[in-house]
Length: 515
Ligand code: GDG
Image 1 (cartoon, protein in one colour):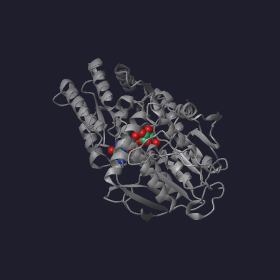
Image 2 (cartoon, rainbow, N blue to C red):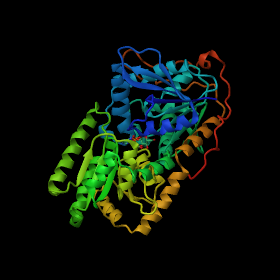
Image 3 (cartoon, rainbow, N blue to C red):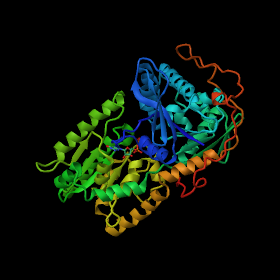
């Protein structure tokens, strides 16, 4: 039985590993290589006209990628996904830009992906769809008669109904969630919010972790994503002996000085500007620390075609420049912001060298950097994690110094507390954090999710509701509700019930997140 993963962006790996800046990409590649199967999605390329997917084999993984037209990239990716859904899901209504053309493009690409995927599916495939770009994909597959088990994992937060409801057509989009057999979210808070949206907007009823809309039943559950803890621990331990350029140069340039590290895509959800301000506040409140500690912020650029990201790029330069000018010395630069991606080896080395890991997103689904920082520490002399209470990771990692990223003074004081923390206390906190992330690592996450998906309740021959009649979409895509069709299976083969996918472990093992 094959595993089929679908995600917005698929990078066909080169023979040699390259630096990758996306948490989703890093996590999924690790998961699929262990399991084997098919990975379908956007190639990242833009073409005048789209054609059949390009299929490439790499070991036990088949990659099937399709290009987007420029109009699709604008509406589906940059527009609806990244200017409407991303800010909305991160509770940033002020940044949410809705356009009907973008929404129509988003639905159209999901339809096109569904059509292309159907040609590649086998009747007993188990399908795992990832992230907010593809929320309506299962509804499109079901509409075309796909009866396979289909799961969805939502990597980013899901906001409460009061926030989600600000999106035009919110109830239409929410209703498509009911096409899945299993919906995974990062935390119990996200589960509660999603269920609240479906109850308020689609008249769903809830029975424990099951949600019923019409005749369809969907399991909704938290699966906090993890990292490959053991691999990261080894990388970091090896970095101590590394003679490669960035690490050697860091050792030389820092000398005895302490290091605070931040690693994030350049994204407004990550709180980078607020973090720089907090570090400046820490140096103002504790002048004795000037010259003794520096902040290294690694921030590879991301989505730079979206205006809000270009603005963040400018703003972070401005704030770092202002603070360095006000607080620096001729032989000491307090803040270094480096806007490029480093290898995983180099990152592991930066984490290991840093006395403080500063992970202060304004809102984050999970945040893998928090887990990577802990995995990279020297167990005999570990650093301290300062973690935003609004990161999903805070639900599991209560032994970090938990802060409110909106409170500059609180973050500044947490940096001071972390730098001054006695070794015994650092070791105590580290050991608990390490145990937690090791028990819920990437292998646990994949096994737990797939065990539940493969054992989900039998599918019902039901087509989820189509878009509202009232919805008038541009380009003649009115989305009028069609009568339910008789389900067909993919490729004309009769759909049949699926058994377990033969994965190790049963559902769901290991510690559950604290809510
Ligand atoms: C989404 C959700 C959720 C960063 N810079 C470099 C680099 N990275 C890697 C990190 C980490 C990953 O990127 C970032 O992961 P995050 O979890 O922090 O954030 P998102 O990219 O926003 O991911 C998030 C995640 O999905 C998984 O579900 O946790 O909440 O927003 O692995 O190390 N990697 C390399 N060079 C860099 O310069 N090699």
